[in-house]
Image 1 (cartoon, rainbow, N blue to C red):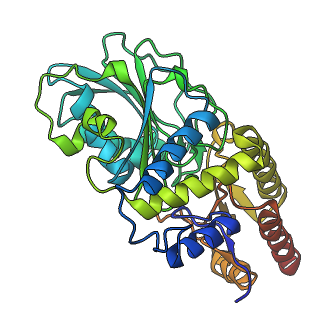
Image 2: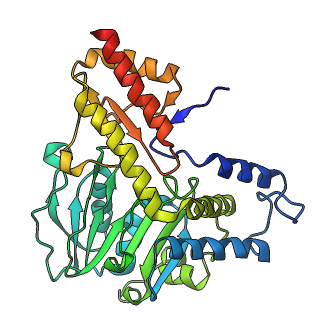
Length: 357
């Protein structure tokens, strides 16, 4: 089977060596004589996997003292409701920045638990930019934002200085660039972009923000229970956490988050330069808000889009079709996607332009 260039938005590409190590563990894991798929999560061997994964995240993201790292299930979508359930009393307000479908879903869930103040929204412009001129109310319990928007190809290039607890959904750009964890009280991310396979969710949170709501919380949705249980209050997604550990090891070996950011800037610059140079293509969002993870673009003549997509697919580029909300194309370029794959896409764009001249 010829090599594919995977531009899919997620679940997404992981390093080849991670696939190989994970495949071997499915057959026989280490000295256990068992498949990783049948190992008990209570064995010392798997407990060490959880411990190493937590330590790697703390190291790679330079997580300061006073923070916990836990693995939960349900994806970022469960966090939309879980975090206000744990942090927001019914009579209190939370501030939300509405920058895309996922941000909008998050604020809708929060309304079930308290008041929501949407401080700014780009919904009327089909989320083609990140609002910047807004005030975060000082009486808000917390401020919630979404760092990167997979569907619309926008990304917060910086974060506001918040007078209240700042919470961020970093599902699609965690570990892709350096950030200061201490600026946030809680960060959450579905694993299936830059961390590992689907089924695992990482939550990094400051311990002191918990235990301040007056409602009863069911155990599975209580952050404190998961912290006390060491991410093993119930049976965790064993294989997903194991593969995440392999991927985090790979990331560290490559030079950590700083090196990932350098590579991601290089890949994004290569593709954006071609989009801006090539008269057949154009970007879909504000230039200053362009994402380095999900690059959305369309053709000036939409009648050529099907033909271009077929040409790209014939050369092994998969996952390029844009989300129905935007149309055109979306090239998702997570950490494991090599520069060479982006070059193949850029060369295809150039060749298509030459073909149509």
